[in-house]
Image: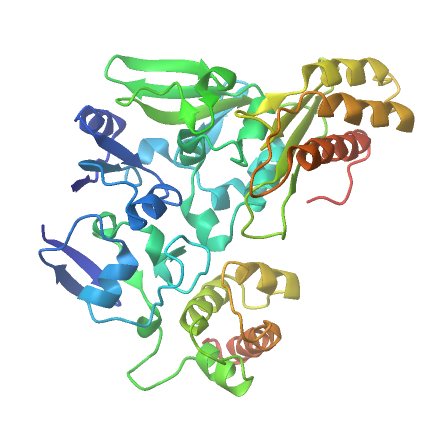
Length: 160
Length: 284
């Protein structure tokens, strides 16, 4: 079975795939986009967070063939250009919010999703926004600091 | 295995008449089972393109909630003013990612004893609207969820929506789990007062095979409230109410908690919610 997905503005044909594959598997194994990480395959860890037609979701819980016609944005699609970082990614580096790095893509996508709707989040709103993203290294303090720093950049420059 | 993307209820019902067809709502239960290799239906009927299942609206003097309403959409402040217990329950579901995907119809179709919207629907005596090859039928919530992960839905039928009354009076949903996010209820409780009929409703989750109403406790508490002067039952009476609520529990021991803990917990949750009857607490 063949179907077409729109990922980061580019159309991709998914050919000869088993139709029960989830979007995370298709992104990583068929479309060469390994930024989204596979942690739990049950929506618990948030490491596969992507934005589907403007809505933050776990790619592992989306049947890939049901996402036909949707605009899918992965962590690879957030940057203005290859090799460039978004303000959120810059802040993660500057604040030391990255340790092993496994959860980082999902957290970056989740923080982008929050800041797209709310450029001045409270600490509670930040904590709730990342409550579905597990990190076993940082203890979240530096992640929260990075998100706050990115929000400030967004407020000052208009871009996260 | 094929995936169908119908855009109307009629087309979805036609698709579901194929043998082995499985409806797919938010995927937060079903896709997990596919990922684990536990499910491999011949046909999946994805429901997210069906406009008729979306949103909520007034239907006469009741509210109609679409089966496709996501938990995030249940946080709508306009809806929260009308059925606050549903909004509170939705807020406790999973994470933003899960709330963006999971739906009311999916919660009903899965019918987990721990389903977070189910005690709210039970407390409100919700009517579930189903659509099948023979047309539409309405089923009371207590006749819809008939066992753990078991409903009276025919395989060829679809949950289209739910109708609930808008009550005047305090509502509160409370849930016990190991943290605030990403938690499956160990015990949950929905409380709703109806000042017009001078009654209270109290439904319990995760303490039985289906959501349970604590009817003896409800009737006793209603008789202890001074509705004329809007004075709540005494602290002693509220204590007694909590005790009566525990008698409605049919909890079992499992990996999330013991029957004794769960039964104790629903009594405490109900007592605390009832204490806010005429003076709502800080919840939402």
